[in-house]
Length: 436
Image 1 (tube, rainbow, N blue to C red):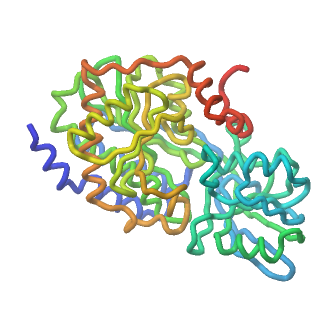
Image 2 (tube, rainbow, N blue to C red):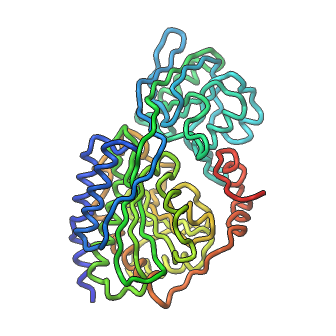
């Protein structure tokens, strides 16, 4: 039967939810907008035919943005606070560390200074350095404040959280500035004193995960996931409204193929991903990892036509993605490296097989993501539908009796992170869960 392909290619279910999500005032973790987004997602899953659609609440550290400022020699430079920055002011000499590579921090005297770094890494560097890693290098060096400069042009200051699981509020004030403001600061004020002020409301809050199920009532399960929260400065269309829409499209398509499923499929759309994977951490802490056959996590899909799969060293996952893509003659890119920065990771870090699915745009970094420009017109409905067809087939294959993906020992995951030189950075930001 191929009718489901045509139905998916003409479906509006995911797109309708995406439009509803981006029209909410904001979906920042712990806000009314995030709660409403979770409710809309729950209702869309139920309408798609999933059973037991429900919300699961959990507590989080709340953070609500206030005004932020950079003052330099009588000028005021535009900036926005990074979520979970402390509501504090700081003053110090500006030190522009460029890309903010580990060796840049090692070689510089940054104590009591304001450190500025770019949001990208150079092409010759062999791994991505997350914003939080750069922030905590600054903290470890005794910096007074942290300035995160976007590498994408267009007067777009980037957002993105700081903080650790143990200490959700960061140690020093942190702000994002556009590429253009960063260039101005470096040109005019590097080595000169400036001040940074961050205002924010910090209190306890509540977030929610959305759960629903489809297929036979088996002990084993395939997880199909995304996250509904977004940063408050934009619509959050690609990050991650499109991923939430993808979960709905897969549910719609699987409803027509439910009798083909040999394993239960659980749809989980997480809250509070953007502030440290809090929703997926909550789920992982309460789930039976051995019962999870694999995870298909959509975060960053439909930004381009080519699907990109981080496969975390599971060769069976790489083979399955390529096999299904060949079936539909759809372009894919598989990356066997570890990818510890989305909602699959609280499971994969313990050896559960999992994908991080996104789009390969040919560009480095988040593109429009985490900026004011993450708006609906950046998402292509055709890409969403085509990718939903491929991912639906992939989920069916992973849920089949003939497909087996062996779990890995946590020690193997830890060793791979060491081999890829990601371990040191994870230890700096408090994300290293393994015993030394």
